[in-house]
Length: 447
Image (cartoon, rainbow, N blue to C red; front, side, top):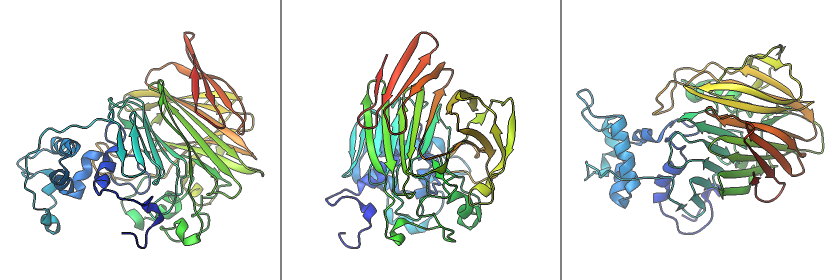
């Protein structure tokens, strides 16, 4: 400790090893699901049995009631029976971890709630149902902390200082109705031996962010044959910047981050506003020169909308883009385009601002296989990418997700990428909320 420190170690000072266990809870969506970003193979917190009896020993060491809560949750999900008479954390027969010598086999009910504020190690914090990990570069917003079906948003803003990370600064994942609505790249059965891991998973277009000139973000901005690039090898940093963490707004929560280190002379800036009925996603991109910008969302929710007319799109043979299939350019008039979607039995809609010089494109992703994240209840569904494409120096991508049968729809929007933005969202004729998303300062809403 104190020597050969990785810069991801965080600020100096005394810290407790217990935080490593606590992070499992506060990185999760309300129902225990995780974002699948960065080679993530753990799909839900109930799958922490994969680390055998470590949480059992953690409970014995710290007596934290949320560890008991998790152990009981795992046991309920994977009960003992005639075929598996042992608790789930013992079933893999790992003799090399028997050193833990557990003394407790029955656990109190325990308790855990996202409604309780906590401090996480030296820099992390959980406030009003929202979690921030500034060193890791992650924030999770939860609209209804006590409701497992409540909407949530996971935003990653960097840095890329570890080989397992994907080049997806400002990647956004959304969760509602107890399901992931969007996702990071699928990890295939062959894992790192699958050639698609380099040519798809390690590309920016495979993530829910903006790709510039069809090139991946630094440090994958060259034709490397390595899966393990990180910024340390290049003597540069890829860090994003936390612009705003606003978990205590009246009826809404906000995260905003930027990054100007992953594309030369291009600034990426994303603001996410979450309410119990909808989410606003405002993505500003600015540069002194012209570029092609591809805003992409990789959806697990199935698109129900059928366009009136489309034209085929060829994406070329560049890394990432070569895997996109059945590309279609929708023929649309400028304005808001509403796409109806379904996730299981849940209905939702994605409203996209299609400006005069912006194309709406959809495409199929690489075929998924049977590799299922640990503790996911369903096999991974096929994904579809929804893309907004434009060529310009600066642009603004605006999207509004509405959850369930909500009738909220976006109305007028004013502003430019380098100015304050105002956006009206209406619920039929009864109610309208005027949102102000400034260049600097907190987000505000007024009726």
